[in-house]
Length: 462
Figure 1 (tube, helix red, strand yellow):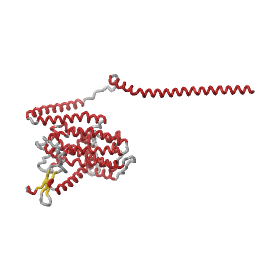
Figure 2: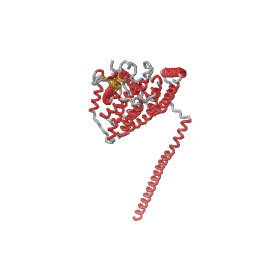
Figure 3: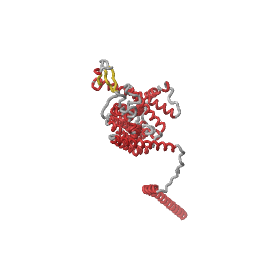
Figure 4: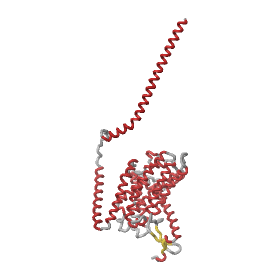
């Protein structure tokens, strides 16, 4: 047993606070950079399995040294700067994209507190996280939105239309999906009664096992948040800002070498960060499936397990779903996710109000469970019906409806001036041709008369 008089809180000691901040910052940086490298390996291996391929397996055992080989290749790759680029913003954009991805986890702890012995004979109580602020969720919302500016500035500063289109898509996508992301984050805030990420995580540890996770209390908000986080890091099927099918490479088309590597790193570090944020908000953070109360070191193990599972699900989505068409992507954000996010918040407000009355809460729990079972049954029935052969749709263009008549009427009104202009242009050409032919005929007749007169005058002279 440790003498309680020898235990010192690190936050109450200035020297320990500075050392803790420096050590945890370096630890987060090294973990995120190493995680970025091997997330690329994980994605390539999983996608290869989904497609019945082997994936990287030549560089090192099971291809584990492939990320190092890729890094060496990018270091020695030629670095090109376009002539029409805005040089300062062109160089700053990759850093503006990468830095927010690195610092977003400053308020997300990897574990609870643990005692660390020091050379002065005392034990310091250290939190396994960089900092704990009472507005941590606001920090997450603020920092996650900054990375989009790097994408927009990269597209604008490259001097390329393809890159510019990718930047514009990113800004529109940010506005559409960050709104749903912020609203869905209100649910854990309402349940925990605090904006502190640590408080949100600790609230989920109160019931036994994994029953305290906020995911079970509001799965709709959890699904909306996960979808919005996918869109936030431009992952498939929301990777329209870098759509190679129509934009070559999108906002990073004109980047190469280490500047491209920064964009590449920012995407995968963002995936890790968003997985950690989702795990903290709805999956209990560092609590369970392993009992973190047994040892503080089990907390980081729980977080790593959840992050790996969420990263694998992101890769699974990429290997399964096609890219969404851009107009449907925007409509999905505004017409589906935004109303459902509002519905999830209203649902949670009703639950918290009814929780004050045990009888009302019991009735509500029964109704909510019945509704959830009906939704699951409807989804299963829909999946079963989708297995049948698709009906033969009539793809002929039926244009006899009132809608088509209105569309054609508007089109005729708009096209009338242009049609009149084309007709006048053609008539002018025909008029010019007519007068030109008439002029030539007159000249030919005049020349014939002159020739006859000259022939007559020469006969009279003889």
